[in-house]
Image 1 (tube, rainbow, N blue to C red):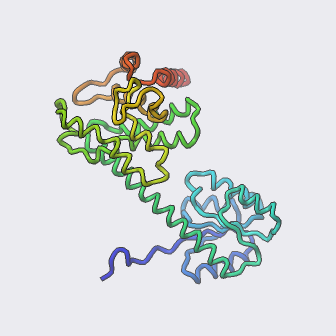
Image 2: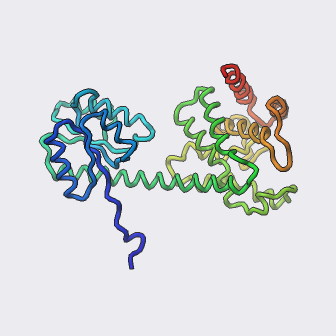
Image 3: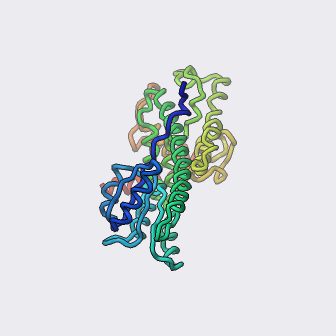
Length: 328
């Protein structure tokens, strides 16, 4: 009997972008003979039109084409988060080292020189498709983790779209602070994943209306460390781990799990703290009504004076909101 692991793999899709019909026909014949699915485009504009529909596993891209060059298209694809992980092999009749350097700078993953030799083509295609397979596995692992996080949120029917709101607030504040791209991405992910560790907290504790016992509170306080352990194997989550672990620390050192204080608390965790408390205050829950913006600001300012939150980030957050409202 066939098992899941015995099931045949789906044949990869390869997009060939070249304006020379003889090259296109040759590549189609060679690649289909090895079981690959092939789609073709005669120039960069046609490639851009078909990319959203076919989502290729690999692109074979000619350097010199009418209109936009292969270098330009490669650079644009590698700059787009939706396409930057697709491997690109640039096909060139140019042997000059400067042309290869231009291709590398544009983000090309490999090169093939004309005339094309079948075994060299197959070897490079196999190598990059294997790399794409590993990348897809990482994407699948991330998708599972995000699904777990949303499952945690769904266990509490009163939080609504809390994670999505946090991701939005946090990225806006990150941009207002002038943080770099990687930090903005980490803040967005942190908005969804900060409470991932609650997947291990029983419903009787997570959804308890009355105050928690000392034992139950200790269980609840473990969720940042558990969330960090879940995400730690993924290298792509390295900037998110400090957010997950430290988002319950307090500026005065009274938080958990490590009792960090002041700037010992990672910056991105402090950013998420501010937007988290604001969203919690301005959202209704079974045990409290939603506060107005003005009431939430007064409450957070008071808590900041009492040592809970980073005063600089609190000031920046409300300055951002005022600026946004003025612009609107």
